[in-house]
Length: 82
Length: 470
Image (cartoon, rainbow over the protein chains, first blue to last red):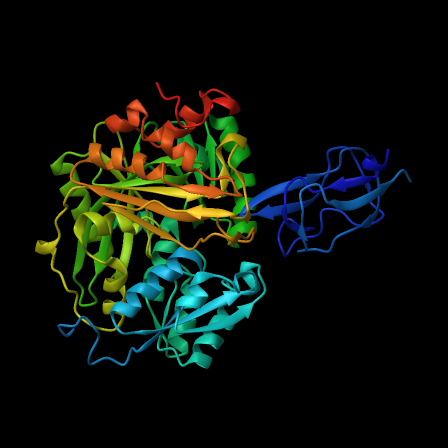
């Protein structure tokens, strides 16, 4: 169960919350998101990988800051049911 | 004039800042040193342990790891050049090497930009405008035209040249921002999406359409503008082995050109470069179809990653030539001096896993043993204990081989690839080991889609050790 309460980084790299610096974040804390929804990007060596929710829920909090370096499998955001 | 010792005389250019990192920063340090130019390295927080930092005469930090805070930060770079008292900035390739804004900022600061004028960069940077310039210079372009937001006009252009077509960003280049449309419905979908992507990536939504030439070769011509209006060509490089429009193997000469085509392409490249008053090293890229008709695609207004294969077959040091031209010195060769001797091939060693869809593979290199011996050149910035950082390009080494014939060069390449011992990260060495034994690569019978076809038809994960080619 514990594994399903966070959204994890698919690959190591730099985490971004926005599609590009001038755009709105993909998602904010408190947003209800659907299964498969993109909540951010991880860039590694100029490759951008989408970070997707693997279930629906509400984003309780982001656990890393924009532009933080993350490891593969690192928790990016926590989800709650409400 | 240059003196006999090879150093620069009678010029104010004494100190060069290198606005880059990795192997190309080291490459520029080497050329500077042979010309008695003092070098200034710059580095991000991620590159404190990098070899280019140690090897330059001086090194200055320019910001955080992410390129836009450091290697793409115009103000930080100009500030570092001022602080170091550098007279010139060499941009390398990538990063700011094709930024007209950066070239202008150098001019404004009274610093020599080692490259063409900001105007020439801008003229070729707008790929749709570059097509028009090429036509004016009597250089054939891929059939196509501007793709206005007027969908009907774009559909008419596509119908005229015939599907499939490519939708490209005018501000793009280097294989980025490209969509394929195989019919009018796909084109209707592609135009708004491509426009949005181009706006987001380049701040300019201008698009153009080109006919997709299937089974074409990518052949490019190296040019050097001497600064007095003369443009010299250094023949061609064949770069058809690509994955996702990124080159993996390059060679010179091209195995697929007959002499009249080679000469016509070289002349076309010189005409186009001369038309924009091109100064310094640049590359004019063409597609060549099965009937050896060639079409201009774009000009790269900088040193290329693969410049080394041209150096190996011509004996001309392109970075030295760039620095001489920037210093206002004459070139040390004329067109009549440029001859191709033998055959050279470059293999790009990337920190990517060929068995996992080329997923980037940053990390610490526990062991880094490199090939050597006759006819082998390696340009790299790795060493045992070096950590390949995740922030920049995945290219970690360029293996280049030279031999009297193409067949011998490929055999030598296979021999040299077998000498690599890189442990701790995944690399493309195994893919190259397979390519040098591939029947069609050996025959020179490839096109820009060949490598992807080969990978798509390959045995899955377990089979790609490089020993299975049939």
